[in-house]
Image 1 (cartoon, rainbow, N blue to C red):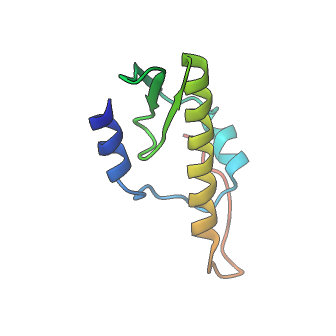
Image 2 (cartoon, rainbow, N blue to C red):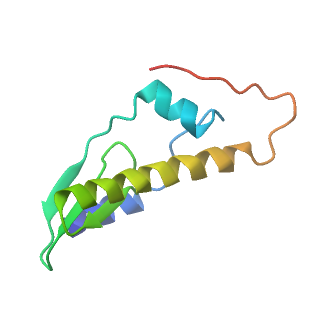
Length: 99
């Protein structure tokens, strides 16, 4: 699991975001992502999300690991949207694209 976490953490934040709000992103995507969960050698569980590089979570139970991963995904998307919005011109168009 550690090798998977290192791989995804090192993948960087290259995903493009078109400046839409986090709520709009999650609404359009229905908030469904893949969670890969494994038992941690030290106890508990590790979780990663292959669709969101850098998103990982941990917890004493599978449910806690999933919640931790969900929180990490939300924080990553919020951060990416904030990064994109910095320095945008006033006439930039912000909209939603459903996939």
